Image 1: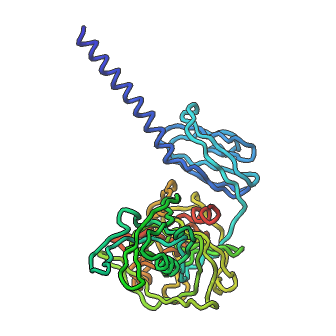
Image 2: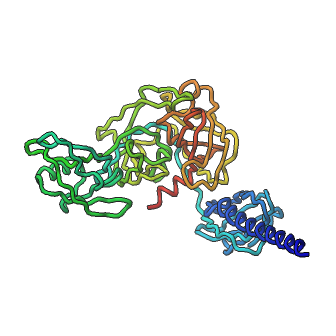
Image 3: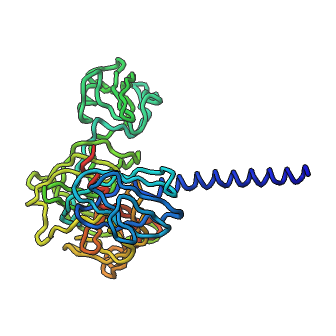
Length: 428
C-alpha cells in the first residue's frame, strides 16, 4: 500500500511538472513566435501565419482593425489552429492593438497593429562613400609612453577603456584629435581632467601626462575622431530620406558601434573586385571623391540597422530607377528574389533564393539568402564586403537589404527586413 501511494505520488509530481513545463514552454514560444508589431496597409487584406503549435484566439480591440479567418467574414475575434493563415484588415491609419489568448482564455501577448498608407521607395544599389564623425573622441586603446629618461610609463591604464569617448579636457569641450593634443600640451605636466562618456553616462577621470620631449606631453591614449568607408545605398524615399548598409558602422579596432549623429555621404566608384572563397570573404576596392560637388547628403544616424539621413534627390537618384512599393514582413516568401547592385558598373538585378525567414528577428539577420545568378557568381563569387545595403526585391516590392556574408560560403548571406530599416530611420 505504501509503495502504491508513493508510486501515485511520483506520477502526480511528474504530471504536475509536465503541466508547468508545458505552460512555460507555451508562454515563451508564443512570446518569441508572435511579433510585437505588424504593419498593414490601409484597406488591404494582409495575410499572416503565426504557425502556433496550440490553439489560440486573436481579439481586435478596435473597430478599425478586422480579423478574417477561414470563413473570410470580418470579425473582432478569430481562433487560430496550428498552421492556419488569417488576414488583418485596417480601415483607417493609426496604431491599434490585437490581443492573443492561449486556448481563448489565458492572456499571452498584445500585438501592435500599425495601419499605414502605401509607401514607396527607390531601390538604388549604387556604391557610396561614407564619412562619419564620432560624437566625441573615441578611445581605441591605451599604451606605454617613454618619458625623458627613457622609462616606459602607462598613465591611462585602468583609467579609461576601449570604446570610451572623451568629450572635454579640463571642462573645455572638444570635437577632434587636434584639440585634444593642443589642450594636453598647454596643460603641461599637471594632472589632466577628462570628461569620459561610457554607456551613455559621463564620468570624470584624472590622468597625469608623461613628458616625452620638449613641450611634448602624452596621455598614452590611442584615439579616433572619424571613419571612412564604402558601402551601398539601399533606398531613397520620395521625400529625400535614405537608408544604407543595413548594419551599423563599427570601429575596426574595438568592434564597437561608433556613436555619431553627424556625417556626410559622397559619390564613390568601384575600381576592382576581390572574389570571395570558402576561406575568406571577398571585397570591393573603390575610391571616394570628397569634393563638395560630389557630396550626396548628410548622415544623421548610425545604428545597428544601418545609416540614415537626407540626400539631394536629383543628384542621388540614378536615371531610370523607379519607385516600388514597400514590402512588409508578411509579404516575404521563400524562393526566388533579386538583389540590385551596380557592382558591374551598371545597375543590375541578380537572381537569389530566400532560404530562411525569421520574422521575429530583432537584429539585421532576419533573412538568409543565397546568390544563384551565374553572372554575379562569376563576377564576385557571391556576396562581398561593400555590397552591404544592396536592395532585395521580390514580387515587385522592395523587402529588405543585404547585410552580411557567410564566411565559409560567400554565396550565402543575411539580409534585414526593409520595415526594420524604415523604423530605424524614423526613431531616435
